[in-house]
Image (cartoon, rainbow, N blue to C red):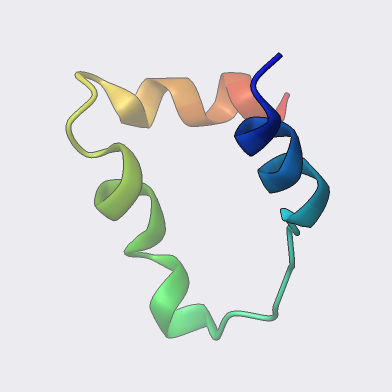
Amino acid sequence: MNTQNLEFAEQATITASVLPDELRIGFWPQHFGSIPQWITLEPRIFA
């Protein structure tokens, strides 16, 4: 077992924060813009 990965997993934290509406519009293109037809996937992800 790789202990480095285990140590990272124990320390990893996911946080959420409120994002102003004007910044939300850029989220999908910034993170998923390289995926062809990403705009058609969004409704399926949240369905």
